[in-house]
Image 1 (cartoon, rainbow, N blue to C red):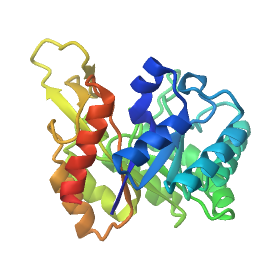
Image 2 (cartoon, rainbow, N blue to C red):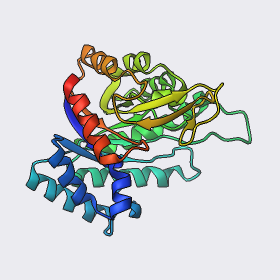
Image 3 (spheres, rainbow, N blue to C red):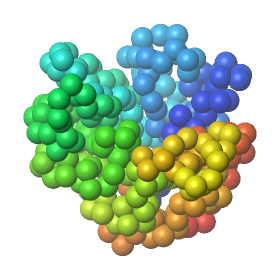
Image 4 (cartoon, rainbow, N blue to C red):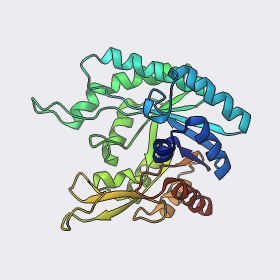
Length: 284
């Protein structure tokens, strides 16, 4: 496995210094990462002043110059919108941006909420969204890009739900971005969930969390899990996620792709990113 880093990990540094993604690429290279992935290139809060395509071309040219591989492009997605064709079209334009970046993987979400005006389950959502996921991934396939969904967001975060979705889509070009930390958001055991997810893995995020049970007062900086327990991000290797065991489970499943540091804790992000990298390098 090669070790990369998500641009999301640098968000605090970007906010504090007003630097741009080119600066972040230089830092990632300096820290020793093999590659970098990017979140939405239309996010003005991340120092982006040009349109996504122009930004993608600029980033790709710079990364080729410094010898940093661009791993993936990560965007939102909601197939429960009323104008579903517009959402499919938007995601196809995101695939165009991924192509301009040179990324071979695009991760998109699938929905953020279920209808509240009638009885509607996540299984019902699977039936609605599957055809549109296929439309997006077939567009990506023609460009040599694979698509995937992360266990992310409270609707499709639990491992059994994401697995059901991927199996329903039933397309070899569509898989799973495994975030070993995010399983805690659904109160799922990260190791068991990683074992379930590993056969479908297209990409992996290494992430760690601190954890407090629901029978304690909510600590500052923590947020609620689906089961009303409390977690907050921390340095990889410092929390309760069994990162070593999860990596070993991926190896056992013959996963040999990228694993990216995704840091979202309260700690100073640059030292935290470096510490996470060193931890992963010692076990990958």
